[in-house]
Amino acid sequence: MNLLDEIAGAKTIGIAGHERPDGDCIGSCMACALYIEKAFPDVRADVFAQELPGSLLKNIPASEKIRYNGATDIEHYDCFIVLDTGAGRLAEAEKHFESALKTINIDHHVSNPGAGDVNCIDPEASSTCEVLYRTMDPSLIDEKIARCLYIGIVTDTGVFRYNTTSAATMELAGKLMGYCKDFPDIVKEVFYAKTPVQQKVMGYVLYNSVLSLEGRLITGMITYDELQRLHAGINDIEGISSQLMLTEGTEAAVFIHGSQNGEFRVSMRSAGRVDCAAITGKLGGGGHAGAAGMTFTGDPLDMIKTIEQMVKDQLDAV
Ligand SMILES: [Mn+2]
Image 1: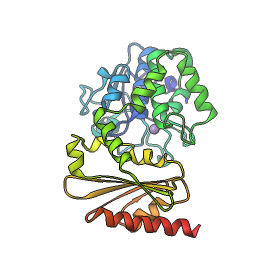
Image 2: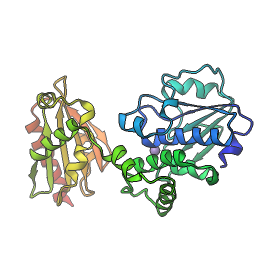
Image 3: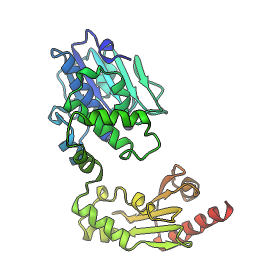
Image 4: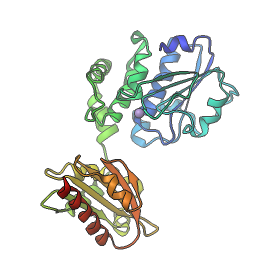
């Protein structure tokens, strides 16, 4: 697909990604808008999104352009471009997508059958930003567009760690780095940076973590009272189970945290031999083999023993 050919003649273009935007979602949306306005300065490209995490708001170029709550004075966009999702998850922008004269869908989710009149979906691609780049004329890319695309790729590849990272991904990232010298800072601020509170919660859980099954299972826990004492909220526990899973020799990691209503939430990770979803599924939760979760009420120490036995049974059976 050549994006400029597809939007030729359109004077108003709406752009949106999925609800609760991440770096690939807002990165691809803003890269798309900046690119279109660079190619066609008389075209208006509106980006719709829900509220962004502070790290993205700070690092995404032209983030002051973002329209919240679907706000616009345009009734029917000539063209509407959906990125990093299909239809149904566009939040307040859904109505603008539905009323547009032409729709385009660019994505990398295997579950997306294509929601647009024209679709460009590559499930093999690392990110929507990588798919979007292939629809662009490289001579129009500038520093701002490159930053947007790089943020999307960094986010969706877990900084080039996940197996969706291909040679083409690295080549593209290399090209984008040529536009700007502060790419290490983007990686740090968008992906790794944590607030002091988040660091304290992480430190607390790691320090108090317990190894069992000869070091093959690691368990970390924090109660709701302890979260309150650290002034931490639900947004301050991201990435803890993944961090536990980095412990050498472990086959599985379990992170449990308390919540306001007295329930406990379990987040589980596996290095490959343990099927997390098989365990959480039996306990009322769901997820994938490598990452799964569930909630429960009752004694967390009893639940840890139950999960420990199920992990042991799986490992013994292999
Ligand atoms: Mn994505």
